[in-house]
Length: 471
Image (tube, rainbow, N blue to C red; front, side, top):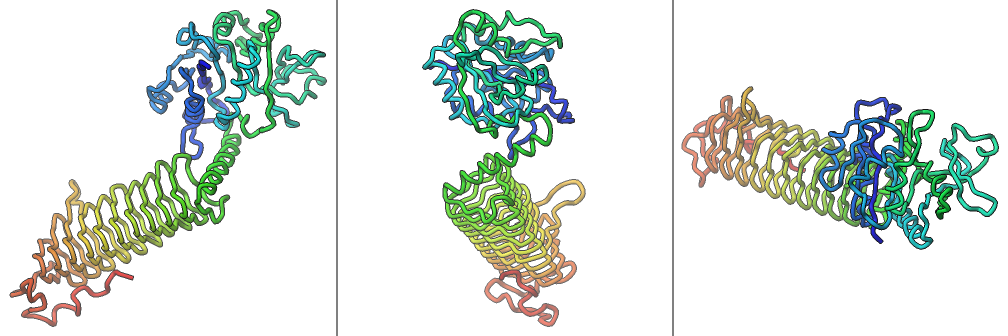
């Protein structure tokens, strides 16, 4: 079957009360219009045309170059909108499927069933209809005594008898492509000054053409988003679907109703998500992790066997077996290697912590490179910004940073070196040395082979570092 898809996304969306085009409002972290585009791709459409109007440049920027665009400069109705796609699709044989960009809950399986019925019956036009007790403002399907579809009447002009009809028009249609492009130009302007796509049903019937309908009772799929209440309802439905998909793939949601996972998040089996966890953007999470409660992970990569509790992780990377929180904050560019522990009230930005590093509590590392098995004492701060530029701190393997140390970048702490509690380090500390004081001084006569030698042993606290940061 040769299939073309036209998605109507030119509406003003005035009821959204927003400067953002309606179809760009996010739904589970993804702009609404992308659901319709991805559905078309899932159907194997040979051509996808997006009819755009208000905010067209913004829509193009989000959707990209994978579709064709048909501008509708004036909002003159659905029939006029579809007609804008004619120059792009005229001459293509097969079926043209039309639906709205503000119906993000439509499932490929439903549209595949509609298109298959259209092909099998040889109909000129096939509608998707909904059977429901709540008419939701939809038009009613009119049938003759033999049950054949003969028209659609809009809710606003339906008679009391017609309003009792429970077969509703969803605004989703399959057309014989050549017939559509020959007849969409025959639509007449309504008293409202618009051209309605629904009038094609009457045109087809008048021509003796076959009009068919495929029915569904899944009202969720037919939800069109016109205001923020509809958006909230759709959000709940999408998140329920997402949670179900992950649970069926081996992920535990302790409480699905209080766990919020965006559409593009990937989670491996045997991970557990606790309540009030928010997984956002392009986040990827490995196996056997424990995430939450009260955690936000945004556009980040988390490896296997990690624990993230009551923390915020933004555009960061956690390798395997990393343990952070509670109340940790990883900012953009943070990279924690295997086995890193980062405890409560720590913050890391644009920094690498090597394997086995420990940063227990109340510390800030910015623009830093930390080697393997480094211990960061409580209250350690990298003073990385001089008011104009950011500077780098390097802490080499096995170093021990005492509590309340201030590392004034640019500065390097050598392999196995130590800083005393409360030190303000403004100069590099050689490997194996001990530095302490304000400003920090390296012990005289100290060597890597004998790091404890000192002219003033009473000046340095035991162990040089004071409170250690590990568990």
